[in-house]
Length: 187
Image 1 (cartoon, rainbow, N blue to C red):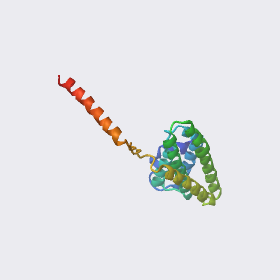
Image 2 (image 1 turned 120 degrees about the horizontal axis):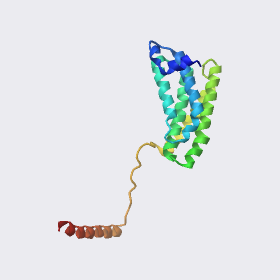
Image 3 (image 1 turned 120 degrees about the vertical axis):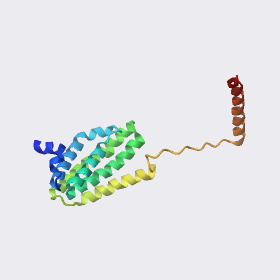
């Protein structure tokens, strides 16, 4: 990776004049390096590193086009990000969260990086590891969905059932309290 490429990575204006999938591919490699270096930051449940990388890969692909191996990378990171979403929203700032990220997410990121290296060794062509890892991560994601459904939706209020006798006593107590307050406010 040259200094010129890194400079152009951040100042793409000169490269917007057409498709350049090689540029996207080099940028995806840099983003994978960044993910590998910063994966411990995922121990913060507010970390959006995976989403930021996905956003950048998507943007680069739209502007410059991409290679098939970049699509594999995008799909694999998307799958692990969906699992990470559930873990961070359900476990939040707990010791369980850190344990789950350390045992479930970070090892998956390592495996993804290894799979992408194998794809590179296969000249950017498909390898069976891509499908098996996507299936495995997709299955984990659907399991989270079955357990927690739409984790971002507010939890519905629970209905509290009060026996009729208790409800009558409670209603009378509230009415008495309101009657006592009314004369004070009218004075």
